[in-house]
Length: 114
Length: 302
Image 1: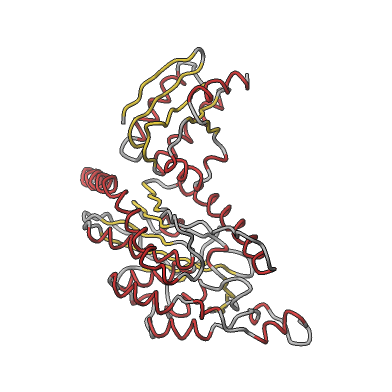
Image 2: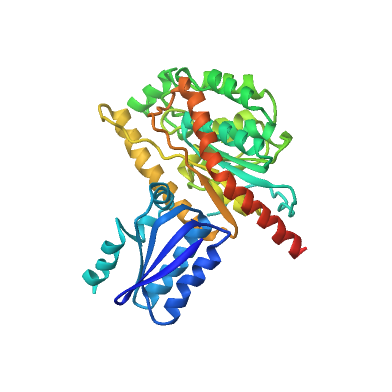
């Protein structure tokens, strides 16, 4: 899994490539935790290049979204592939996470909410 | 939620690649589990425990007894046909219309006779008991008195499967011991919790969402739609919790049926099995990596 950080004003986009699973969930959690620790709690996870997620990946997202919201921010998802969206949906995660069609929409949503 | 079972020892760490298999409710779609097991077996991945719910209990029993793909496919085609719900239970209908006159009770109400279903289950499983299976088997049902998930780990397979398959309103509940049991899907359509409780590490969960009705043209279809709404929401909420709570990995196999599969589309069993196998094959690269990493982690811990 590769993660690229792309700042958009006060929103940080994490573009993820590969699978989000048990083998790299810790890496993902750490990648999210870094910016949160630096006071950046408005995060977008760009899932356009994520082809698989498992329960460990879901847990990583859950940890991160709780940390962000506790600090007054949020983690929002963008550009889910159908197979990933299906896993998130059937596991109930689309009910608690905000999901957008693309990164610009997800970034803009923070402006709407602010 | 309290679960009831005779205690089973937590599985000790193993070095061979194994997973715990959970097969959820889903009527004939559960035959996809045959393809799942085939893909796992061909890849050299064993099953250390199997859990089944509702129609999934039928296939979990086949896995636990070591039936091969051809045998499982054949018995599915012979067993799971529309005829098993086509026998009207006249007494049940009368009890619905005039409950006092015909002695309506919770344990005697069902609109369909279960004689054929029981006969077919006996044809397949005979007098075998759950505790006799080669792979530890857990069949789930629901306590009618309080809604609790009940884990059946002893006794005749036929009775356990029939209890797990107590489709509401259609089949009478089943009394096992002091409990009156109804369909397992009413407490959890995909009972991953049973695998977790018994110490499973990597869990492969084969789950199915209930199909929504295309057209509501009868009270029966209306009831099916309500049942599907409830069951699908329960499936999601339970999976959300289990995904968050499991200490290791929960791999969901969610076969995508591009062709619509109805409750008793028995002719589609080969297609359903193929979809289950394909869905599993897509997971195998990750599953192998995961099991290898898990084995190394256990070796280091030892």
